[in-house]
Amino acid sequence: MKFFLDTANLEELKKGAAWGVVDGVTTNPSLLAKEGVTPHEQIHRITEIVDGPISAEVVATDFEGMLREGRENAAIHRNIVVKCPLTRAGIQACSKLSQEGIRVNVTLCFSPGQAILAAKAGAWCVSPFIGRLDDLGLEGIQVIRDICRIYANYGFKTQVLAASLRSPLHVVQAAEAGAHIGTMPFKVLDQLFNHPLTDKGLDQFLKDYSKAFQEAPAGR
Image (cartoon, rainbow, N blue to C red; front, side, top):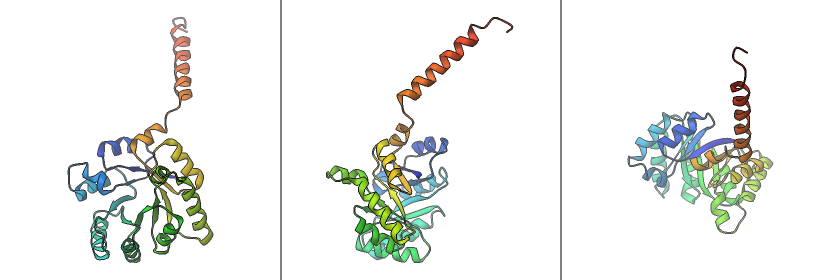
C-alpha cells in the first residue's frame, strides 16, 4: 500500500519525505487555507518536496467551474491529481477530465455505489472516508473491503485511496482490506513507528554494548 500524507504543511512534508516512505500527498481547501498563501503557490511548493501524486481539489460546484479549475490545477505540475467531489457535477467533470488525460481523485465517497460511479467515470482513484463513517456508528473499513472486491470483480483500474485514517489501526485495517493507497495526517504516520518493545529492546541493546566495551581491558 502506498502512503500519502494528508497535509499542506511544508515542514510535515519535509519530515515525512526524509524518512523515504511518503509516496504522495493529498490536500483539500481546508488544509490549504491554514498555510497563509494562495493554494496554487502552496501546491507548487509541495511539488518541490514530494515527487509523487499530489491531489489538488477544485472548489467550484458546477461542471464548467470544475473543468476550468481542474485544468488550471493540472497545469501546475505533472504530478497533480485533480480532486473532484462525488456529486453529479463532480462525476461529469471526472469523466471529461479523464478523457483529456488528466488524473482525477474522486473524493467524499461514502458508499460502494458511489465508488462504482467514480470507476465508471474513469477516476484515477476514489477516496472513501473511513473515519467519518465510523463517526456515524458505521464500519468504515467494510466499505473499503466492499469497494476493493467490486473493483476486482470487474477489473476497474481505479485505485482505492483510503482516506480519513485517524490511527495506526486504521492504516493496518486499510492495508488488510486491500486499499491501494492510504492517506493520513503526519501524526498518524509518526505513530506507526511506535511500539514499547522496540524502545525497550533498543535500550537494552545499547546498554549491553556500552557495558561490554566500556568494561573491556585497555588494549584489548
